[in-house]
Image (cartoon, rainbow, N blue to C red; front, side):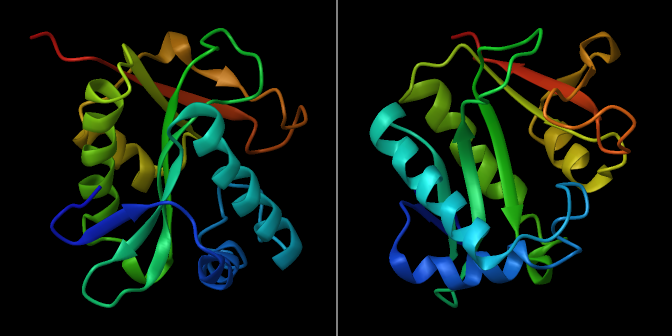
Length: 177
């Protein structure tokens, strides 16, 4: 997929180093449990890439068209935990901090939403984060996802008492023709 400024594509071996750099940045991982080691980042990249073969979609590498740089990912995934809203398909993004505030996450996520509804035939897409992640929540709202506080949940993979356990859930349904 292409947008005005992004190429959204499958993973390549050379994407791992810039992905590891952004995963090691405490600003990027503030709401994700903290920086990742290179090994953990590489393992995540491998898992993410395998999902394309299994699901037909995934978390696409976000490549900046002007510079050719790998700046993160934007895409769709299927959460592997159980909650009141699963099974579901989630839209998510993770961009290097140098690219924040430029509308790139929103731009790429719009293309991914369209792809999810049209090419993948999805009826609903969700997104979730911790309440304090105002930047991601703003992207969700710009995309037209809506938040109902009754949907908020405690993430089952985060221990009780941890400050990142509580999550807000946003949803969007396929547009009616």
